[in-house]
Image 1 (cartoon, helix red, strand yellow):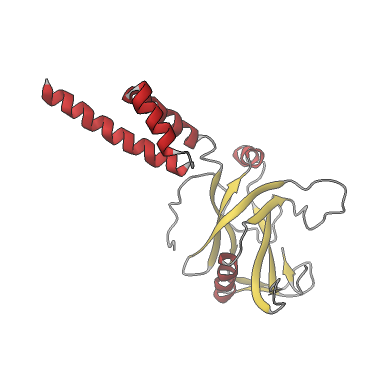
Image 2 (cartoon, rainbow, N blue to C red):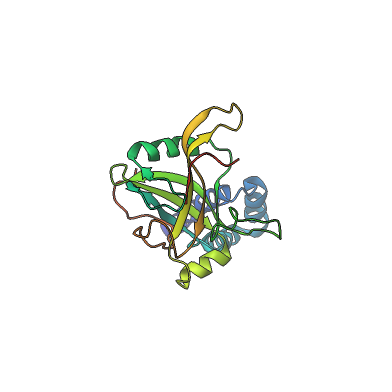
Length: 220
């Protein structure tokens, strides 16, 4: 009987640790919550709390995922009238400039931010919080956290594609110096310029391989 009791205490101790880790992720005051749960309500309350926190972590968990933003290539028929070329160096510089940003890159609908005429708000559909190069640097991918509305539209397959806005010769906002290619924003659209990118999917993990001011020239 004592062995069973000790095993139960050990198991509950691991549950308490799990709760602590979950609460840290959600920026909850560990001392206050755990002290009240353990001292006033017992360890059973802690286990209930663990379940609730885990469930809350899963809410909207599939409202994010990796998105294929662009791939290497050259196009002479861009609507700007200028040839557009993305190379591995282009993507490497975009990644470097992205990592220097203080804020995520915005996703909107149908490039509404670029066509704004001051008639009301331009809703965001999500934000790019991480960039990654894949396929030996031939593809640019972004981790996107979608809004609930955008996730519903993607889930319903009303939007399956995206289109990035890239400044090929961007300028540093502070120094005014050229910093090369920069990802300015992206948009949900089913009529993208690069129409052979992978369709958008909602997922919390990636099983893809190989992980790893208006400027002068703008591609979208």
